[in-house]
Image (cartoon, rainbow, N blue to C red; front, side, top):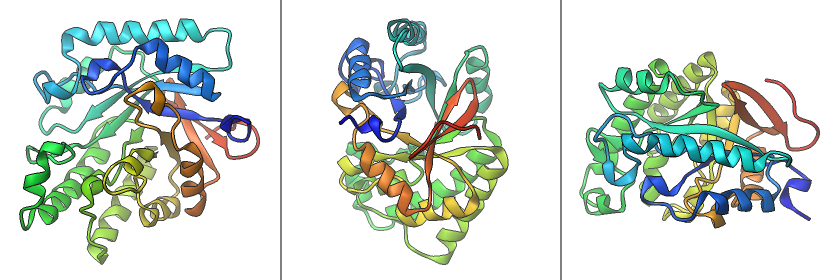
Length: 282
């Protein structure tokens, strides 16, 4: 039995070879989504804006038309199947560049935007090359403090539908301290997200990273449930074999926190795919 026979899969966080750290051709990703029995296959590669930001980890601005073409071709190939291909983008927090990024994305007919933070104060903390810095005393405290500071501004002012991997700094095992201040910060962030209609991503890539845990942690996911947030599922696929990966684990993780559905965004509008039953509106 396919995983989707029980629960419909909406994988909203996948990449393409254009990001320079993924492999495989678009047709292979689409074939994997079809074989998995997915209902929605969302392509959300790294945004090329602002120009010059982390060029080794994302497409160049000149390649954006190719990205648009890839999504369009995959939509055409999926026509006549039960799979809907979605046009998304993963937009990075880059201080002082909100205007440039949002203006360049304004003309795109995107289904959704995933907002993510990979760097704090110029330190790209999820890059394997950053490990020596992580080992220095005080780095974890500095990164987490800056991350929560930036996360609050990000969800308060920027325009996106989904917050990606919301506790990413734990990737290499440097977890946030379980303090009252830490919990209070996330409660405030989740409260803002609720007011603005931003969903929280359940991202299984953490299972394959040194931390060996889904993003976000279960305590954070429970806080998100208390705040009334909706959640999305993301494989964070960087190869066709990763499409839809660990979906049953994501469902169990969400259920432990009290959720009964994942959300999907089509043309900016959210709907829910219950873990049992039919698709519903917000």
